[in-house]
Image 1 (cartoon, one colour):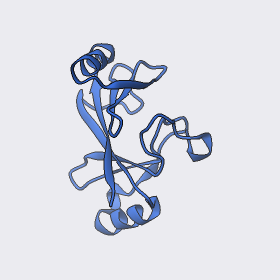
Image 2: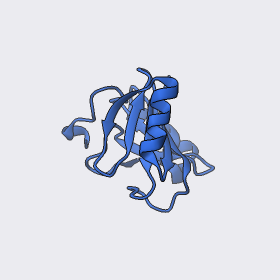
Image 3: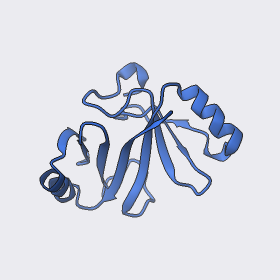
Image 4: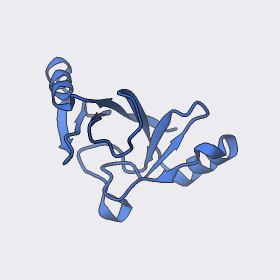
Length: 130
């Protein structure tokens, strides 16, 4: 069974939003990107506060951006998606991505990341595209 382990919010005020979640919910800061995005965690789930003024994938409105599943076998999951919704088949994430190896979409166009690595304290290793 896949485990929901990642949510991403696209915002024009990543520092303020990250500070809010750290102070209110006591989330721990895990990682900060060069463009000002901040990754937080409660130890199980990663909450990415993504900088909308410098997004990796422009064209998305501020708000919920994508979510991610930690899976045991990405190929099995990709095959299931291919069978049910070929247009949403996972594609490799850009080199230097923090955590997920691929990103797909559901029939409504909602984006999701797929990772065999997860969203813990360690970033995706270079040999997996990190």
